Length: 364
Image (cartoon, rainbow, N blue to C red):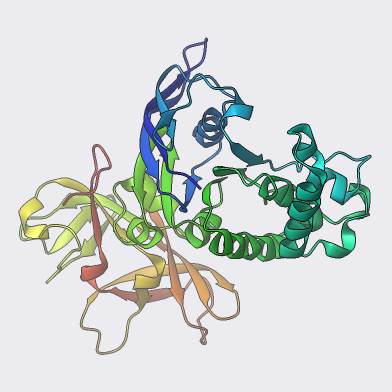
């Protein structure tokens, strides 16, 4: 496999739109790195630039320390899997798997061996004589993966390969891709807008928004120490709760519009809150760190109105209103009052995340 490096890669379209702004990161040999972000953030454009399907405006793309900016896609030794499968309908599964190898002029015996190995690895042995119209969505996606696999490329590029599958099949195929990567130890870049896919698949994640890289880190570091408000709000389901206001002198409360969040004895994950009194900030709190208060609660408490209860089996999401903001708490299954009831909530201030209200950056 190979090491892939991007250095200040930039893509600007003729109309002046900046699709990718100076992207720099390295994908280690054998690493599965995920590009994640909302629609239009530049992740697919960046992947297509690595593949050679998009011409970059500036910067350098290297595979194994060799610049590939001026190389055609077929000369970069990459294999790409698209979300629409792109299978030839008149060919059998075996013929689809073998097609690229035949174009490259590989000996027949080598082609047959690679096709057999890929089919066995992906559970396609009994479907080799079938045509795509007979296959389910998951089977078609496995054929698309197999077609990339038989190439034995230096880098695999996967562009939202699960987006056309139903929820159950998406989970199953995601596990297959993870197992495939563990078996091959292949260098992979995986593009998705689904933060659950990103968190469960990626060894590291590149979070993009509006063409700019927001943060590059491991899934848990992104979750526990987001670099800014965008990352904090994008990763996590339900999303992080945000309290926007000004720290009162003494750091005993956050003054908000229409409410005051008590912080007596607060100890945040960022700097001491006493050091930022009088400053406009945003405090973030994950739903699992917002709980129903006990009678002997020792942490900060406040009252919020219960609006909607969402039971999902092993846990319950409580949608609440505190002042002018909506909150979500993740709690264990239990007897709950009817919507409209005021509930006392508690949180450990040690779990708070602190962000600057002006630029959204984490205060450290």
